[in-house]
Image 1 (cartoon, rainbow, N blue to C red):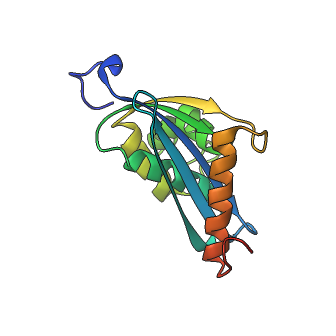
Image 2: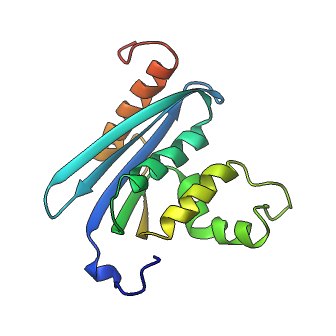
Length: 162
């Protein structure tokens, strides 16, 4: 978090649920998030898609879009079914940066453009990470999945009900 004047307990608290979907990998994909402000009960949900993408890119974009929707620094409880996203944020990103965005075996980091955007966003917020098992009837994860799948269908040129 970039603002040293604020302690995390003074920041607004939000819950961010995210998911990505792809029909083929690569193929048409969709992303979605549900952002909840527990103190007010307000929610925001958004989704979008791309014609040719990968599941990992959609998972990353869901988090980027959710964090970008916040107008000020916040204490974010991030819920995702993507180990790729959560491990990248918690464990891998700092090492990638130290190595010039290279993996441990000196290969370029995949999706570097998105990881760099996430790195900037994680500097603005105090983020806690929570893994949710996908398709386990978790209400917000299921909602994100439905929105992401519908967005992928639209990106593919089919209606969301197809």
